[in-house]
Image (tube, helix red, strand yellow):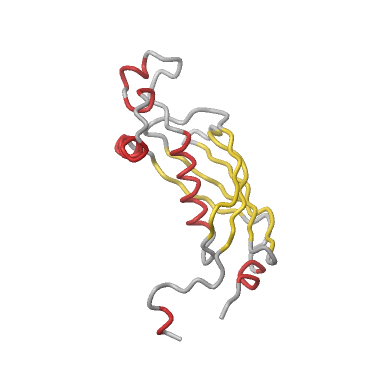
Length: 151
């Protein structure tokens, strides 16, 4: 059986992984429905075209959700829960952008079962749309349903 300590020891600070996801109109519409956020800057092209942005802007919380998906996808074998996260958004991302998240492993702490990661998110043009850091609490020795019968 692999312990959290063993799994964390196999991760090297400085290692990176990327996750890319296009964000479509339907994604933004579903996000607005789920959250109850009716902001016309995200939903109404006519409204958005009259703003300084000239087009529909992605909600930053949606970008944060893509970052969470990137963390879940790029740290295999170690399901984690965000303990704390700092993000800043130096430029806007827009509906129909393709967001690429790069996760860099900064440090592991086996005793606390945590992983510190740096986060960079860019659009298809390489524009930095989010950056920050997160600390994940790693859930130790999780057994997928039905796997306990395999032992």
